[in-house]
Image (cartoon, rainbow, N blue to C red; front, top):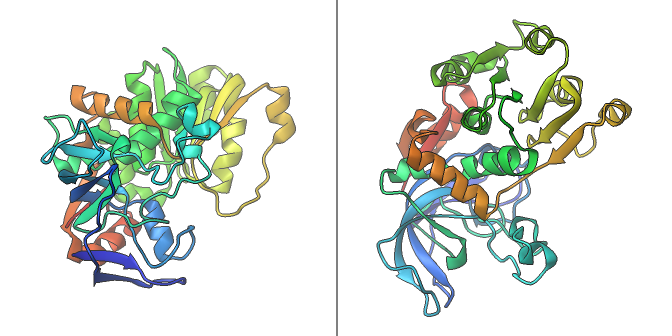
Length: 344
């Protein structure tokens, strides 16, 4: 089968190769991949800026149908349309696994990074990671479940949105955009989302199209003045940092109100960065860091899709065949796309 492989350490080193079809173990299923989205982390693997173990098939935002079921698998049959959580090799026995937080298991090895991923024709995963695709979703739409589950985990599960909250989303990538829609669906009174000039090609216009209450290009408008005006100088109830940019990380603490909540999801460009620690302490901010997702995150995201509260088709701007992966990666970098999905 054809697969997009990170062949070796270093910049680049991505190529389509013929690789064997995976052989499933007793507790696994084999999935024919029908669609897989390009994530920012895939671009970082191409740039050699994200952890991975080569040679490895990359890609993890996938949807497909079961074509083979392991001997010990029950509840799933050939033909079932599925998406999958990312916690391959989680031990199932540590404190994190036993409390429903397998994403934090030290033994976890996520597909597309440390085990073979989904920019290919077939992928195998443990059956306990599966979720059913609602009948009213296409495979391409369902491929948006993984980034949406990350948003649901960080925004709804860990940070929390309460009715009438003023919510500030820093960053307008796919996860930022879906986070803004989730905040609206959770009852936020006002949702603000930010971007920069580069985002005026596609992502800020998409935010306006989606009906986000306030869409701010921080290179052209005064974000602090807007937040103060909307909140009578109090600050936002919730700030979600998704850009990873150092100025935005600092703003996430500055623009949250006293006793406000700050959710950190974006990856910064360095392992150690400065934050206004004392200010956050004396304003008694609640700060949560978040990565990956868990069972409830996937169920919430899929429910929002099924009910039409969040429409994944609105976020997907380009669908390309797998052999055009290089064009898809270029589009994802260019600012001309919101979400690019590849079809094997």
